[in-house]
Image (cartoon, rainbow, N blue to C red; front, top):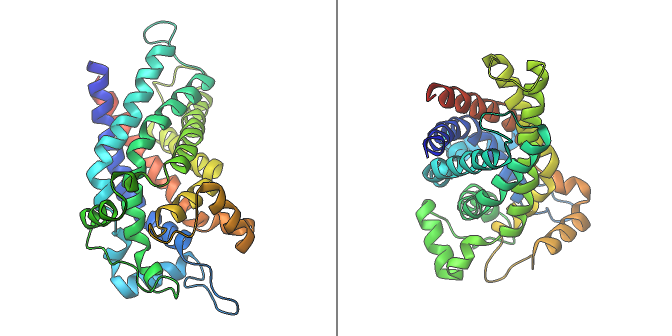
Length: 296
């Protein structure tokens, strides 16, 4: 139980650091992912990441880059505590003896297991976040002129519950699982592989902060590089209308994006996602390791 408490505390602090550093990048990613495909002969609402930043700040001020942060901030403690605690418990199950170092493959298994657990918390949280972040792009489109304007995370939850009940909050669960399981498997596997490489062996306890920052940043990049198209599908499904949905499911969304925009459409917002992943995950893993170490 002592180890569980330590993982809970360290995961909470690490998650807060990740959110503060990475949320503006995430806002731009979601805006680019969820903007409707332009009509023939018309330009898209956002020509790229920098254009999305400029338009967001012009219309909403710098606070617009932090829109939707209330939902993940409210659950960041639970999300990261759950992620690192499940990973820690799976590490304990896979160890041959207490304190023994795990192989990279074992860390991949731990990451996948943690990904399953956090998906059920991530799905409703991200649905609320995405609908808040994307509403300005959707409201200005010709196909969504009547889009609901949400006052905040609780307002989104109330609208969703009114339209689709509790199940509505879990719209996009399949692509969330498809993102979190392989994504976390890759992230924790890469993180451990890099730490062992820097340490020259399985004992990584003596690594400095510089090595932890590099390992954490590249591990975060590996998450998005391995699952990004799945995240695009998740985002478009979660901002889709409940009463008149454009997509019938994950496969349908994938096919329609591919048909209308090609492979490029599955990588909308990839730049901001990668730009976010390195500093945000570097901060998360560094703060986690420092906090975990300080707790003994």
